[in-house]
Length: 213
Image 1: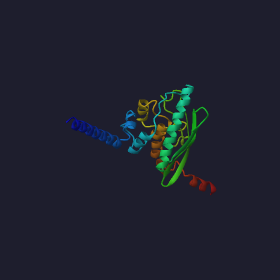
Image 2: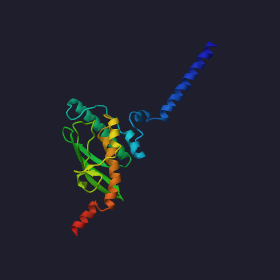
Image 3: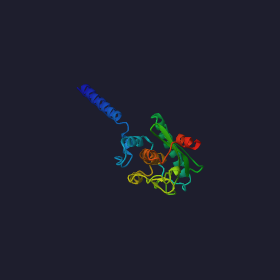
Image 4: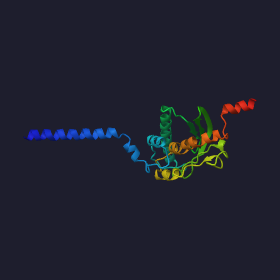
């Protein structure tokens, strides 16, 4: 009788473990998503929401004046950016390149957007605020300065009203990669087609042809 009872207990234990393992396999990203506060993300499309949950989160709260802590923060920034870039490449959606100066306070590079099978490329730059990461970087596209109302003086893009609250809720988890994903990527998708169709932005081949003629 004792032997039968022992076998029944073991059988129930194994059954419970199988159920727990199956539940974990069915929700592999649950732990990642739960760490992002405000994950309902009102104002963003499903693709952006999905991408955001796959970008590694950061942990060190440090700005440019914080010495060794800032060095650690930069390491986390690079890991997050590398993961984001690799993810974009795997989805055939590679759309930016950036690099920092020696102390990681000034970032420059290129970003691009494909519209009607043509690639439009723009210079990209931003400075890291002294109060970072509490304050997000202001992303600049200087070539587009004055060409759209969705931009501040100097070529700083105008972000959605939902950006700052979400960034604040997730400080210091969000970094440069998250700013590009939530800020610049949606901006390019919304504004570049309008700028091209209105004639405010010309493709480089069209510009070259006009100058030759």
